[in-house]
Length: 352
Image (cartoon, rainbow, N blue to C red; front, side):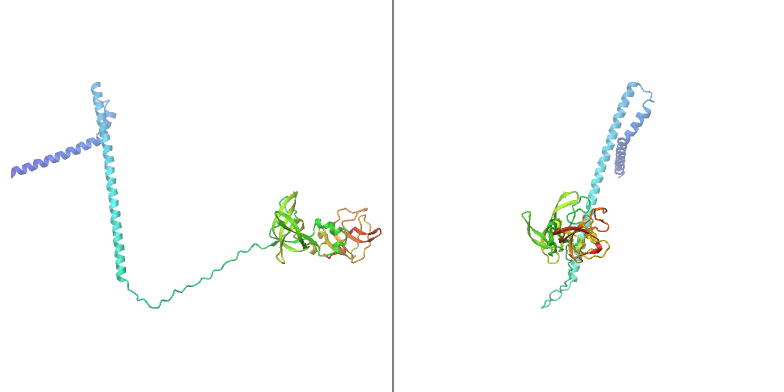
């Protein structure tokens, strides 16, 4: 019995010695390079050894230090990969457990819900569901409302050389320079209403297709203009009669935005053609181009064609006293015809 105990003690002692040896070897292998590095850096030159032996010892220590360092790095890498694998396995294991617990809870709740559900008896007569209609307010999209604008009209630019924009602008059809000659060479101007040509567009060409009355209120739908000189444009406008909705084309020279026949300032209105009636009120009698007084009966009518451009004095009409130029048809000393006469605005009134 004593021999057996002695044998077991010897075996345990040997195992302990083996473990200690392994630990010592591991420590030497892992950290021996530190000792070697210290010896090489601080003690190698201080040792009193023969040069040949010193070289041999130095080479041996350097080799063993390198082996120790490589062993340590390899151990660290291996340990890190093992720990990473264990960590990954641990995370995967926890994820699996949590997923399983979630499924168990879901199954349990579903079972409890089914067990507590009561069956509702079905009625023989089914009532259709009640639908509540929500009124929907639809806002109608309307085109922009036409606007009155104070523009030059007749294709004349309102800013430098820029093309005038007449789209969606309210205005009027008015006789222009194309109709002036036919209205002023006889008493035809007394035949009202005056007419302005209307056009149709056929294959990109504008063909005269009828007439529209002077003063007709219109709104411009589109325009096709071309630049002719500095601030002037020519072309055609597609317009719509405000009263009846009829659409047609007119020459841009027949479009104005200001109804001059309603002006109280007759001198301002004299930039356009209009019929006026004469009745002497002022102290400035009408004169001819030579600034000679002209005797006219009250009530006589004439066509106003513009404003006096002469400065006055001598044998020229005074544009301060008689600034309005008109053509008067009557029997003159040398026969019947039209004569340019200059009037004071107080003596005239617009008839048409």
